[in-house]
Length: 611
Image (cartoon, rainbow, N blue to C red):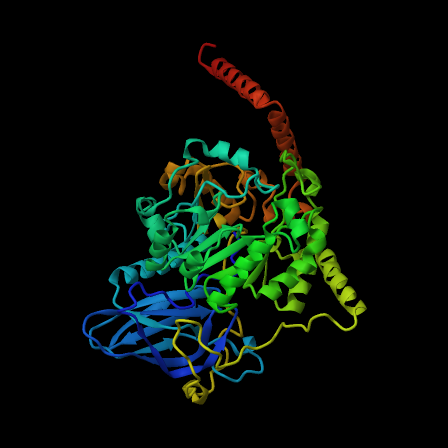
């Protein structure tokens, strides 16, 4: 699964606002800045936080971002002589530290500074970014956040060691919130009937607080929950309750929606929540949207404008991501889609190719357009050019981009440089032909240092930047290196786990289920999943991966000539067999499996003593 923005609360949502208190960043911090996700301050070598002393034990929540790749940068946090060293993973970390009764300040010390070669022209001594801290009195939340961070660290260490049997549980848990949808007939590329047949008796299984409690540490230790069900979550009657549970436990929720159901009540519930809301749009005009779904695009855009206005614009919660799946029906609207993302001020544009499938069998006549799934698939080289075009368009319009084709393994710009650069050149040539350019490039604009605080957040006016007077940092001890992350060619089977109505999957591109929904605990360290982890840790793709041709890593390696020819041929024969089996309504497969059993019994009989 694509991890474009690391989870971490913009404002850690305290479970009980009556106990939540602001924390003053009084010493050792630089002026306020804001990236695309949250406000933060750079911290120097040492810093101090202050808060009101109160009776009873409380807990300090601290979002911290490190750029080091190897777990080598730590944050020592001391309160009244009690110190603890917190390990930090690359990206945002949400830390929780116990504050004894009466304590009124905390000291923060960085184990190492960011090498100066990674902030050239900036003479400040920089350690890491620190988001908005909070103090609260919820012991349950403290235990939950601490467990999440401990599990993340353990999972990373097990992955880097290449372990196949894990003590950690998945940091990112795929869930199936709702099994019904409001778009009927379904989106033209959605295999609705096939998926619902796979779900069987579980198609209407409820997803409740009890579901989460039954998962025990699998839910407790999960940093984020990713909704991967085939259905519309805003149809759920108990969504409000679940959002409260996720916020109380410090979870990030990634949720896909078609955006057609978004009343003010839901918007009010979402504002301030740590939710990543992916809106499946795939079109910039009502005409193209009608080819794929229906005539609801104007309503959806109105919903999005109301939501983004209510949350205060880009960078506030919930994050709004717009999804574009390039295919023949909509590829001509890529530029208009990027412009729409810029106009709406969304947090991220997602570019995700239509899943590669040689015999999906989906055909529709909609809005005067004939949609045949197999004919909508674009050649790989064209997808790479579209990625290049999207990268350049987003750069010019100031839109953050998450490209699923670029997921894992070597990047597109390096591995398929000619086609990727060709896409960029197409945009540049078109822009040069226009006079004047339609839009001034927005990339590189720096947010005001003292920008207004998001709704519900404390104002963070620039304070005396004590760190600016700190001693000049020592020479880079590591020669400017941020360390090395010893990672497998794909991290999914360690970090992700999908418990879905249609079965358990090790990644969102998996084609074969590893077990039924209720076998989640035994599947996590099952023989097959161990084998998949072992192959990936050794730098090769497992057969299960090769049977998932939609996987971006498989596609890039296949088109880059990095999969042996014999394995390519086996994969093609396997897919040909699957196609014949599908056309024969499963009869060829039954015959094949029957013959295989007969041959197997005969072989065992021939090998028996006295045979």
